[in-house]
Image (cartoon, rainbow, N blue to C red; front, side, top):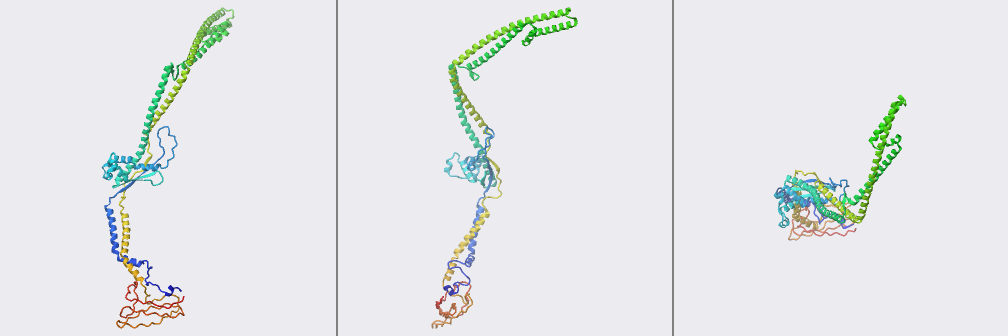
Length: 559
């Protein structure tokens, strides 16, 4: 058996304590109960500080305006309306977030809202910072307004919140909406500025293209004058003359051929001399001949009628035959006249064809003489035409950008304007009081425990001294016979002092068969009046300090 089991009783009182190194809950509660005024004073101090903070701190109000960012290209006019939208670049939204608090955006808000006369916005700023700007008051106002503005992106989307903190709810809402509007307008204005910059570059390029085009055209004209080359309707005069001469020659040949065919046809009709052949003169185109043919047909019809009615020997038949002969004679005369006219027309057409052929030959000769000069001229003309087309494209692009300048749409839209807040943002009275309550209680309890550390030290000192168990103590264990030690002899008292009652400890538990333990008598160090030993109090036995017990000797017990 171990030494602990031999002793058979604890070394602390029945009230129960922690280890020698710790503090039990009863001691802590006792300390807090005795130091309640300290805890209450510190708690009141913290609550008073929180109340003073809530009363003395100026109230501020906060509200937000929600803005939607649209990265898609919004082209209203131009030649690229059907172009597919480009994908959004990484960091596009984050870049726009930084533009909200840019100097240009906030400077517009300061100017629109008249914040230069607002003490909350103007405030004060270091003189060194203000001296570096052109307008110190505007720079100071922009700096302070930037501290009042907070830009947040709630989630990974294209929505941003523009939050403004001010000393009045109306001003907070008004400035939040103003900053959002300035941001939206600024995005559109940035596009306009880019277009104006592009127009400036295009204007300089247009001027350069115009100068180059005029220079090329001047070279063309000088070369034409130097080589005697004329151009009409975009082509050389010699080429145009040759083309017209070729057309005239073809027309003259056609007319000559037609005149010759008509003349030969009329000659053939005239040589035939019968009406059957004369019927081929329908396409001659003579009104006189057509009338004579009608008269001849009428005379022939009358002859037939008279012969049927009166017979071939009747005088009327002879008169009809005479009319037919006369008409045929007139037709012959008309045919002779037409043949002579057709011959003259043929001669004229042939002479005209010869003249046109000579003109064509001269134009062809002239064009062949200026062939080398025409090649060099064509190069100059092509260069001038290319520069002219380039100049036209630049002018067209500049006109298009000028049209786009007034039709730009911003990439941001206000979807939720700021509203006037109903409760102030700071000071937060409830939170301040709660923190003061927690901090006051914590500090008060800490100070109280620190002040009560003497009580804990005294309790530890009392428990550190060895002492026996209280009277009437019996160890718990199995029911077996416990031998009782024989009473020890008490020493005779000192003659000079009154006798005292000996203090003995209960015998230790002894296993069956072991020799009885003999307890040594405990003598008091001072003379006291003998009295019965009362039961120990509930408190730790640290108060019994006047009697020093003698060491208890016990025979060794085998395990």
